[in-house]
Length: 222
Length: 247
Image 1 (cartoon, rainbow over the protein chains, first blue to last red):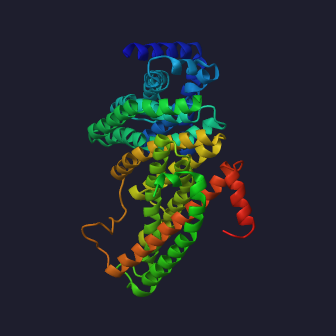
Image 2: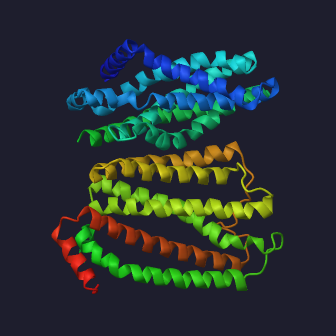
Image 3: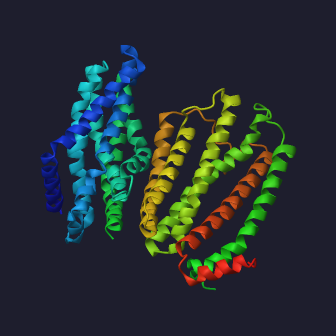
């Protein structure tokens, strides 16, 4: 079972590394969106510090869902997905592997990059560490829930916009607790509760997502 | 009586056609009764004066918006498991009505909020989750509209509806912990804080909305059936019958 998952992860990572530009594009999207906010709301450090957790998290949400349409599309187009569906291991395991691989190339880099951008917003060291931790814990849920949307819109016209329409409302709990954790740290109260809920969302999201993803993929492949 | 017979659009189409006028009539009766009780019988509220009377539309619309999502997910799940064509059609027919009620609930809530809270909109837990519910309806409708193959559209929509129904409580509680200002629920089963006549008017209006929702979604389901099965013999016969004026 684990072999199937690791094989899928290794394959997807290899494919992603051969197209580094895609990963970099999503990361730069994140950087640009975050940088636009000070231009929009003004450079007062006080205000920037206040909006930083929310802005960084919303930008992370958008960046994470930007790469979703490609999650299954390439494999769908060249027939690899069909072959994967025909192999003996259940499609759910393949889906889980793809979710993990998607997180490794989209969520993880966001978590690593975010403290740097947080610095521009004048967050304290403690808040920066919390931002990275919250993104680290929360982004797997984004990949899990997002994979459902990606699978449902596979091969559908207007897929990119549709994914945002389907997925962003479902992302709200992750956003609330993720940004909440950072805000709680800024305010000086513990972020323990937020992090626990975030971890719960991630565990539930990654655990349950493979079933609807596999079901949606089977529908798309019919 | 074999209930499965009505799982086929061919048998259900005429039955729905006969049921719709009854539901319209019930909707009108309950609606008039509810409005009479609401506007003429029920007393003004001690704190909110006459302005509270929008409750007779606001609360039923909110209830319906949530309830219809559950019904929609129920039909979608049934369709996914048993592959009934009709249940998918019902799910699809319910979505626009549910979205309409969600929008109506937000709209009336905003009209109510202005005099009571002094603001059209507040990022309060229930408003926000109602807004997200509206987004979920829009996502469902958009997904079904984007897929041309009706069978695939049905089943993809069904998965989305089920994922949404699992997420609704999570969204509701996360938004609730995030912020709350909305007045507590006025109605609960154990003890109601409302006058009996107000409650009665509200329940009558809720029944009216319910009957309206059934009538409208049945009518919409009938159109979907005709559209999808337009190449079959029974549709031709039904259309000919209607063209002659006999139902």
